[in-house]
Image (cartoon, rainbow, N blue to C red):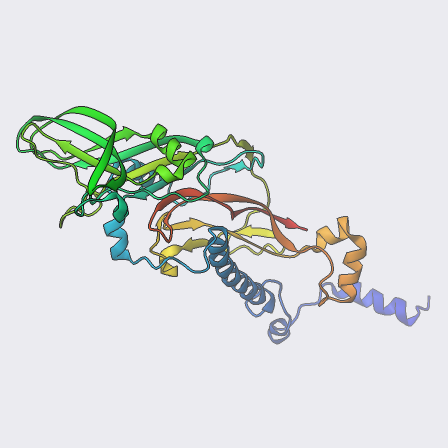
Length: 377
């Protein structure tokens, strides 16, 4: 039987079996995932660019959300002097030590109908001259901005440090409201008076509830001329630290004000997560740690670093399934900007402890600083 040429050629291929390439031919063939494949390098370069852009964006976002045009000019040495060595601040710092920089599996979903709790710590300053007679008293005035509302104040505590007494004694802690000087005399109105028993050789922090006083100041700002703090022992020695001496940095009086609050709903986070070594080409969330010390931002007390994350990857499958027309447009014009791209679809806030320009310590929430989930949109 006579075979045609095509049939004869096919028969020869079957008889010979698989064709084995030579070493040279093998080296000339591009293998998927080989080091010479430019795709992984290109992807890596794109990720580095996105990370760089994300870091710069975070700088701008933080300043913008804090209503700052530029970072406060507070040095590391100034931070050490201004930072109160007091229980409430230490409790906040301990929270960061326990939590570390890890993001939680459970993400707190924003409840747009409620405010969030914020704590503000105000360092005492010298009262206005109108409330001082013969240069006294040197302390204490607490200034408030318009953002304070009496109805939102949950708690207000005045913290005063008492120097160590030579012997166990009784101390009478007195808080008086200052009034404008008249006839060369300073006027004081007693606010609170506490009787304390202290041990010998031990300094201590004392906390006084001043919510009612603060409420009056907020509703009638013209009455806020400051307060005078005294803590006399039985010998008449004033143990209250109102103007710090060398070695007493961080012991000056301050007011801790806690502002309202609202519940947030818990939900489980979902989405595609990748690490830096992943070969995933789809839209994915990648880890990115922001280090504020690298920024030179000493005015941020805590956290010193946090996991911000970023999004990178392709949205081709999403185009095909949800946006078929855009998918075809992008295929025809790859450089075009039409259609969804890989972007954060869920973000969460971070809690931050920082100094503002008035050298007040603020503990509050900065929204949309952590990428929780990435997607095509």
